Amino acid sequence: MTMKSILAILSSTGFEGDLQSAIAFCAARKAHLTCLVVSLGQPPVFSEYSAVSTIWIDQRQREIDELSQKAGKIRTQLSKSDLSYEVQDLYTEFAWADDDIAQRALYVDLVLIGREAARDEELRKRILDGALFQSPTPIIINRSELELAPHAKSIILAWDSSNEAPRAARLSIDVLKHAETVYVTMVDPVARMAANGEEPGADVAAYLARHGVRVQVDRIASGGRQADEILRQHALDVSADLIVMGAYNHPRWRQSLFGGTTRGMIEDSRMPVMLAH
Image (cartoon, rainbow, N blue to C red; front, side, top):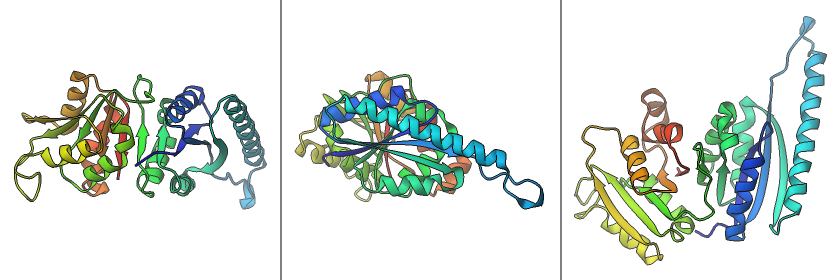
């Protein structure tokens, strides 16, 4: 899929690095950039007799004014670029933020979550719940110290023949085809027709090769270790710039209780991760 419309979600508390990264990423693709700068407000505070606190009202207005000023600053910076762009500001509460973000994610090809936005735990949760789970759009989240490369040269594609893995592969074609090598990485693959075929990884490698992707299939034994740990280590071994994977191939309530590969990759990865659900 060619990525021509990209949404960068920016935190109102800090966005300079995320903005520059998004500009470089979109410039490399000649893509339209929509910047959504988000401020999460506090729920209403009630005073005596169930009246809304005037202090809360004043604080809310100050935060809205500050958000508008920051959106104006972003517009000024983008006006100096050659990009097609737009800037939106969103003042919302934690309870509604995922729905607000999901609506905006419906009409883009990719959502970017940079380091500054990802550091805000509450905002990160709302973005993941909205963009990743309430829209069909893939995301790239960067919680590492590495900059998001405009074109990753070395990419890990985590493959397990789940429904999410092929979806991630298809939606990331535009990213994969620019890499020098894409390592299709399988942990403890089982050779059977109902799962990986007689030669695990061969089918997806052929599919990607037809799209001009340079592929290497790596089958790795876990040795009892968790899949996310193995993927992270293999990514370091091949100097990967990006990990691409499907998100949550088990019910999310199980993942939240017991962890899982997706949660491990989001929380512990030392490089950007592209997720599709």
